[in-house]
Length: 478
Figure 1: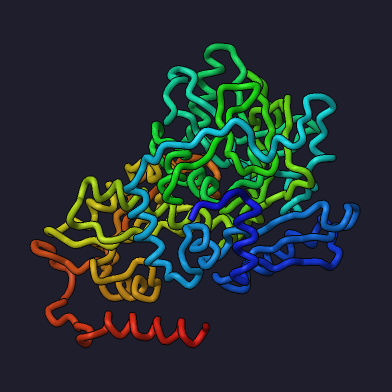
Figure 2: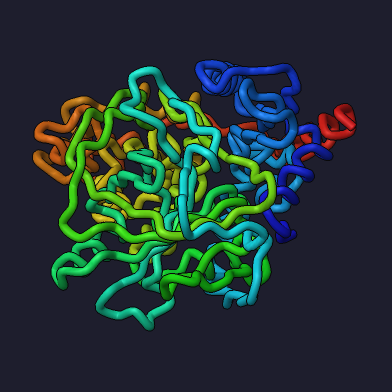
């Protein structure tokens, strides 16, 4: 099921009716962001957009792809599954493939992006059709690129080479600003380099196959390789190629690659930026990247990502792959109890956990464990725990559980002054917040908080009928 490169995936979307070509002439601002925001407002089965006629550029020579995995059908296709695969099935299939980690990489000598190489007179404004995503942004941003860096104390450890997605503000023709969030691996690498008084080599890959973008957005452990996880997700080795200026590996199928280094000790004002929280994050002093070498394909396709009030492509891109690591880490502590985890809401600031109960108070312990996972430390501001028979992906069922099982006095646990990512607009000061566990499970002894002696059981045969109805719907659609 592995896609050869970014264009191969776009072709698959085209064949499956999940790519909309926009051939009428559009302006970079505000048309592209406005069209993508409008698309996101239309539901969770939206296609990707490919803009082929941009004012000021030659038609079909400069193209911009938006919303590439911005729906559940496109997410399913990213995994090589039928586009109508239900979300819950995508979750458990992702979890199954997650367990296949690691899958060793396949190294190549050359890549398609080697078609054009620049080492002098680099000008990002000539290479990329840059535009602001939201009107209040402090400048042009690149927000869906894979940024590769390496541990400076253990450079031979392949797993400690990080592939992450970080917002990049264009500061000049060959300079970028970057926000290395403290909870993410690149912040560790930068600290190590600056303690040595050295620049940190980085590579930035734009327009990559969606499997590596998905892996890069997955909260893996520090020593787990995103490339080896990409191989697990696609079911075969992921292809990489060496950078020329640094001991770093690059996604083979990228459209554009920028090689450079984060400058030691140098900081510049960065922001504001319209973030995934649906709020502008303000301006802060952030590190700077100097670009020294550029490669790109002939007429590269610029992949961008609109970001703003959920839901946007961000939420599909980091939904299942945030939920599954939390699910796996909770199962390490509670292997027979945790049923499923839905951490798709605002990057897991809200997480819903379905669990069996062993004794009174058990659900609250599961909630506290979620907050101490690697992802939960910086996110998981509100954790909702529901019974095993409540589907955490079915919000009406979750709301029912909260409505009927939660006792505000006994079941809302507030823990003060815990860490959260600084982008959370509710944190005060930035990076510190109270967190809350909502226990919406049925009480077990010795708890006394309601009368639940007559639970309502579903009629027999519901699961079989669910499958029959799905089959009938599929036949009708085909």
